[in-house]
Length: 125
Image 1 (cartoon, helix red, strand yellow):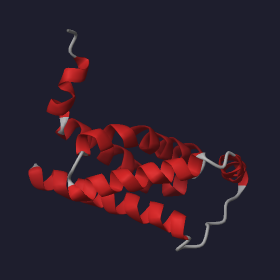
Image 2 (image 1 turned 90 degrees about the vertical axis):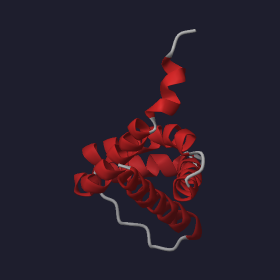
Image 3 (image 1 turned 90 degrees about the horizontal axis):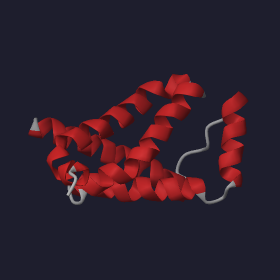
């Protein structure tokens, strides 16, 4: 189980680092968008802060996953981002759904593998 945790954590960390660094340094060309996803993407870009915020969180959580430090906190911080990745891909770009499923369920797997660290949040005092 420990090896599975390290593998999933490392793969997610590398994926988050790659996507965030690629966004900030413009390493890969922007994919052509069409239809409803294009309208959604235009709205996101018009907000001017939302995508850089999400990519900054991806970068920080990716670093956390790769180094193995603050993973418990990073799992909670990245959860809303991974949920949005899943839902956007489910409804707007289903061709990318396998990667989105891996990201979301990988995050859920890491949360449950560190569940002992979260128990105190749900205990009434």
